Every structure is written in C-alpha cells, then in structure tokens.
Image (cartoon, rainbow, N blue to C red):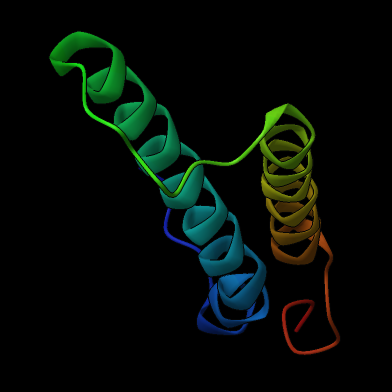
Length: 79
C-alpha cells in the first residue's frame, strides 16, 4: 500500500467521509427493502427510485471529488 503525505490525506477526508455516508444510507435502504420482501414486513421508511438514484450519484460525486483532492499536488507536497 502506498502511503500518502499527511496533507494529501487530509485534503480528501471530508468528501470521502460524505461518500461513505451516502453509501451507508443506500445500503441500509436496500437491506430494509430486501428484509421487507423476505419477511413480509411493512417498512415505513424507504427511499423511492429517484431518491436512490440521487444518493448513488452523490456517493459517486463525493468519491471522485475526494480522489481528485488527494491526487492534486500542493506546494507542500512538491518540496
């Protein structure tokens, strides 16, 4: 595994955390839907199709922003 400089790791931390949060929300929604079908539960809180799509798009966007923030060289890294 390649170790990143501390400044590069800090730059991408917030978008990566937001991406992980979106992924967790999506996964919980999918698992609730599957449990509702498998166990015939009446799940009250579920996202509709458009909301699921927006969560996945946000997850991908935050991930790309985080990766680009980590890849962008700064003045501190070039020394």
